[in-house]
Amino acid sequence: MYLPFDALDEATPFDCCVIGAGAAGITVAMTLAQQGHRVLLCEGGEASFSERSQALYRGENVGDTYLPLESARLRYLGGSTNHWGGVCRPLDAIDFTARPRRLRRAAPGDPAGRASWRR
Ligand SMILES: Cc1cc2nc3c(=O)[nH]c(=O)nc-3n(C[C@H](O)[C@H](O)[C@H](O)COP(=O)(O)OP(=O)(O)OC[C@H]3O[C@@H](n4cnc5c(N)ncnc54)[C@H](O)[C@@H]3O)c2cc1C
Image (cartoon, rainbow, N blue to C red; front, side, top):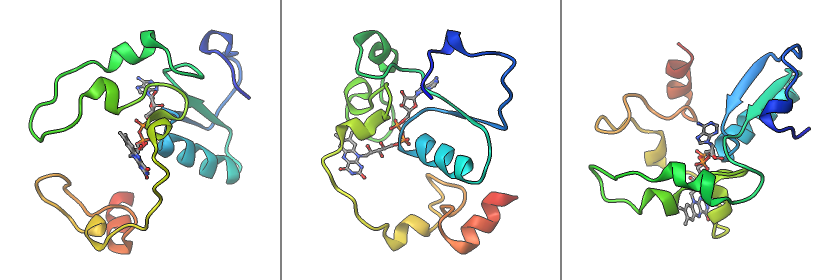
């Protein structure tokens, strides 16, 4: 069920709250719901693109070179998947290795990495 935030009934109990309805948030929320949890998925943007919501993504990139934040990320339902060019490819081996400069531990898809993320 889709509700604007101010229509939420404070008395309704939820087991979990997931913030952000992009690829990651929707996947986590659906997985939890399929396990029988009552899930509240909170999306900061609206159901479709709006300048007002997107303006909150304005910012400066520092460090690694990247596209401008306000155009590379999308702040509404579905998140940056609304930019997708239709590419779905398997993960590479490097995605499961620890990269000290960026990640302190291996990604959770790796069995050893998963164990460390549960701690
Ligand atoms: C041009 C472009 C093309 C791409 N094409 C592909 C492709 O073809 N295939 C592919 O696999 N990947 C593609 N990607 C990468 C892919 O889009 C991203 O990796 C993916 O969408 C990231 O998902 P996410 O859920 O982590 O984050 P996001 O998609 O950024 O989702 C974050 C969500 O959180 C919401 N949010 C933000 N702040 C708040 C807040 N304070 N409270 C509540 N909600 C909030 C946002 O509105 C958004 O809905 C592309 C990326 C770009 C830029």
